[in-house]
Length: 252
Image 1: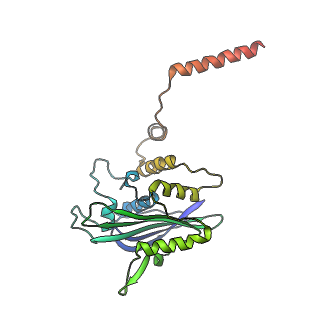
Image 2: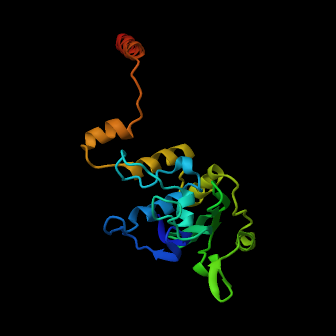
Image 3: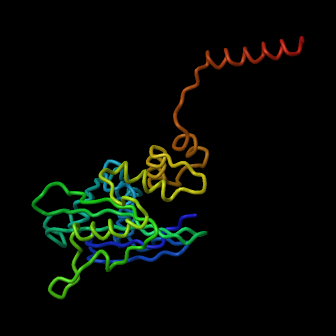
């Protein structure tokens, strides 16, 4: 089993730098507005390679409520409805997830680097990385500038990733979110497991949005099972053919 053991954040939302270490069983608790869903959104961003089309921000919120969250507002640390209510004017955001194999103790770090600025409407995903056999530390994401810890420049961070991956003969960098997700699923797969990109994306989003305000029967029928109408005519033809075959066998 692969266990998520650490979430590392640099210039994400209200945090300049933060590492959250996780045990085998963990939860996120706190009053409303304390940032619980923001942490889960950070995990989403890293798991989905910064592809907003695949992300359901604040997934457990009332569907009728307007959702103003985005990767850009998270990077700039926007805490109010107005863009002026932000922590920083520009950001080099890192979100790294560290996994550990419960059997082999092998480590894996995956994540994204994102740039954003108040005077640009769109954010930019500078890089997506999946690095086997290594846990990147907070120090790997930061550097000292005039005596203060600042986000490490992506070019420097990228170089250290490539150098560490040389021993494995692998390329840790991925240009698009689909390639990145496929690489992460392959690295995190179980013994003999075959990663399925489409299935993961659908299941991951469903799990985040899942509510337990309905019966298990309703959840399975309406949310888990794919809506497929039964072709009655075809079904009868198949049934009749089995009956005919059964009669033929009985007559032999």
